[in-house]
Each structure stands twice: as structure tokens, then as C-alpha cells.
Image 1: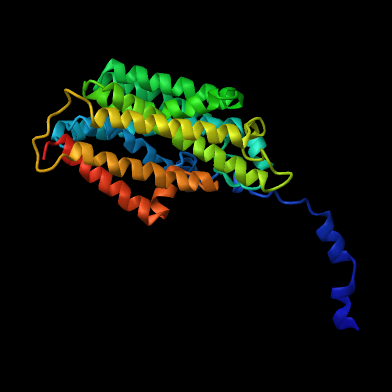
Image 2 (image 1 turned 45 degrees about the horizontal axis):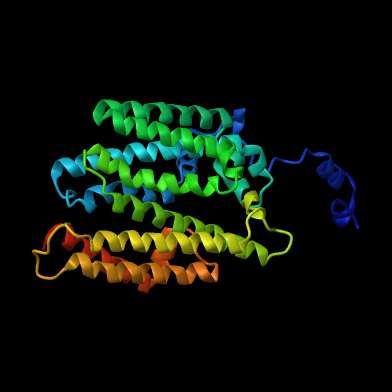
Length: 331
């Protein structure tokens, strides 16, 4: 009996109950995160997986056939870095502002700011530094126009974080405009005139993917009773019918804009082996139709994930890219 007393006694259990409950994300001694953990947390907060979207800065130079020169590549690498810094600043401020709400979310509570790895003041300070430094460097190293666009992007995205993400239709417009800014900033940096058909196709193509993603989220939440709007509160204000109408309309206008570019009279004459400009139209339409399959199913999430996880769409996209490159380089 004496050998079992420690297992049946009340003192150890009472001592355990009297101990304070440890926080879900304990801080290191002194209440400050370790430097290594802090740096990793800051990096995670900037969403490295989202940096791929900033490769759109090459869109306008590529469309003009002025991409593969050393000065262009150097300037575009700088534009990519500065735009990434701006988007990182927005993510840092957004996560710092939403830290309390994110702690109550089943998934977002693991974000570094919500988890306590990155203190809220540090996130705000880092975001502020990046937000000021990026446009300043753009004005110094590139042009005032690029600096103005980056400043406008920051202002628009911060307004989105604070209030615009709760405004019907405007939230779609802001996200779409962010993609359009990415696609045009490279052209502004290299002083390349932007074609009206480029702007129409890019803008409505971005709206197509944004609305398709929102539609997919709405469909998936509607299939889970009691959880609709858990991720995006504004989804409770949209109907799936409306979001379907938006992505279908946007897809149609994007295809029309591309058709007008490919078949435009007075455009670049055919001097290559084949009429790549016109042939690229087939691949572009096939890519839109293939992407629409996932939108219609309600499985169109992040655009890059849709493309990378569907082999047929990736092959169609690469085929279009090859034909487009041959068209703008006059092969």
C-alpha cells in the first residue's frame, strides 16, 4: 500500500490544479521572442508564398517585347523587390491590426503576430519602415511615377484592411486593382506605353480570377451550415449567383479584349514563320475555359495553386506563353 500512496494521494493533483494555465504560445524568458524566432516570424508574416503574384511586374515589358535586355531585367528585379516590400508592409500592418481577432480563429491563431512570436508593436514598426522605404527608393532609383504608384498601392491596400474589405463590390475592385497595378508598374518603370487592350485584358482577367475565388469560397461555406462567412464576413452579403455573374462577365470581357489585340488592324504585321499573334488566341481561350471548370465547381482557390495543380492548365498556359513570346519577338 505504501508503494501506491503517491498515485492515490491528493497533494500532487491539488498542486497541479493550483498551477496557472500556461499560455497557448509561451514567450521565452524575459517576455521577448528570440531574435531568430522573431526574424522567422516576420518573414512568415510577409507571406513568401504570395510573392509569386509580384512577378506580374514583367507583364507590360513582356507584352511589348522589351523584357530580355540587361537594363530591363535589372530594373524589373528592383521593381519586384520594392513591390514585394510594399505588399509585406500591408501584411504586417494587417496582422498587427487583426491580432486579437486572429487569436480566436482556428487557423489564423497560428500566424506569428497572433501567436506572440512577433509582438504587435514590432509588426507595426516593420510595416511602417517598409512602407516608407519602398516608395522612397523607387523615387530615387526608378522614377517618381513608380513611387506614386507604390504609394497609391499602399494607401489602397491599407484602406482595404481597415474598411474597404467590408464594402460590397468595392472589395472585388480593390483586389483586382492590386493585380492591375502589379501588371502595369513594370511598364511605367521602363517608360513603355501601355496598350488599351493590355489594360482591358489584364484588368478583367484579374477580376475573373478574384471573383472565381470568392465564388468558390461562397460555395464551400454554403455547403458547411453555420460556418458561412467564417473566413470572409462579407461573403454573407454576396449570393453565389451574383459572384457567378461577375466571373462569367469578366471572363468574357477578358477574352474579347485579347481578341481585339490579336486581330487588331494596324497591329504588328506578321513577319515570322507562323501568325503566332493570332494562334495565341486559341491557347488563351482554352486557358480561360479550363480555369472556368474549376470556378464552376467551386474549387478555384489561389490562382497559382489552380495552375500548378492542374497539369492540363499548366501545359495550356505554357503553350500560350510560348506563342505569345514568339508573337511579340516577331519570330
